[in-house]
Image (cartoon, rainbow, N blue to C red; front, side):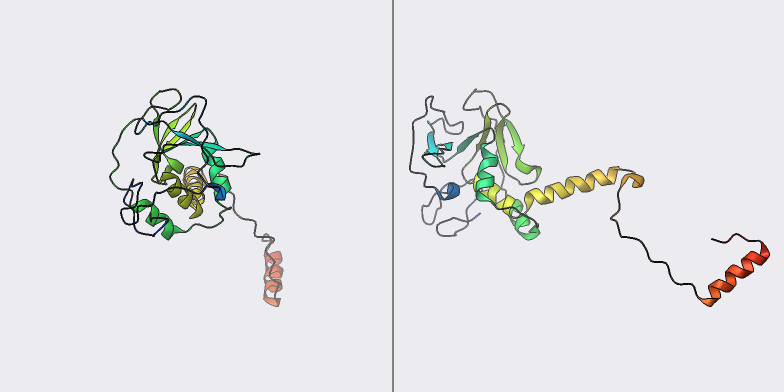
Length: 217
């Protein structure tokens, strides 16, 4: 990934650009992220143990709060919020950009395997490869939501824009077809095949078959 400010390359897991000092963050649906509201029960970042800020990524009339750590810029999104963020920021994708997907997934870096506790229930979360092939290993609590390190949300959005979900669905469909017997695989309808007009020779062949007592088809 590149720095959104100066476009300089960013190393895996880097939250701050070493060239311009810019932070890796996402502009949620064009809304600024300078409005903080203290949560009723502050959530503690599972990466650096700092209190997280509740950011309103929506509007005053329709608030949409997301927890972000002011220190490491990690994000915690409640169940369903990640999909809502994707829907707000990505238009429907109908084609796969294989080159872009390859670039996004080939430089994941050597990630340290560590299990973190959910900021809500303090239970250890599962490590999940988002979309099965994005290369973004998120920490997911089945009951409360998902935690993303700095820059991982931007990578997920880029992966979805490049057709990552579509490519994953195509891969699953191809694998399913490979395990099904040929008789169950539906072929595309091609329409009625027009019959070739009979030539005088074909009429002669039919007449000879009748004389010999053969079967006429």
